[in-house]
Picture 1: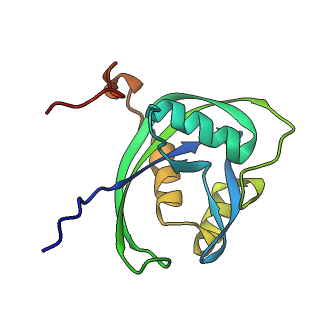
Picture 2: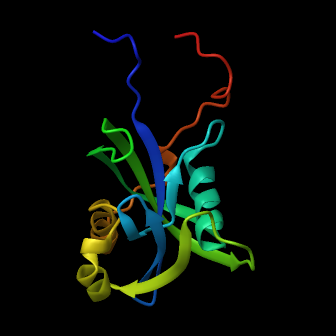
Length: 162
């Protein structure tokens, strides 16, 4: 038996829709070029809301203000890098796209793309994961939870005493 502590990877994603089109990023991955929402890992010391705003700025060069939680998704994948199973918890948010900036996109991000739903369906074999389409489907079905469901303790960065 191993003494290593198991921890899921926590990620965030921005579901951004304008006029029936959804904002995606085209990115280089170990599995080739794929489409994803502006998304990424929760960094130490930040809230989920801060993380999704940061990821959208880094990957799409736009401000993003989360207004609702679309869903929380758990998935497991075999890492092509390590050969180990990784469990992901993805928090997907809808919200408002704000100002755009003339800045380089995050490493590995090739460009931003706006796709309508039919284009999303037609490109599903190029999605980073099945969650790309699942999150959009949930958004289109009107699934929204208030951000007040998410609570970050004010001392979340401090020591945890059990």
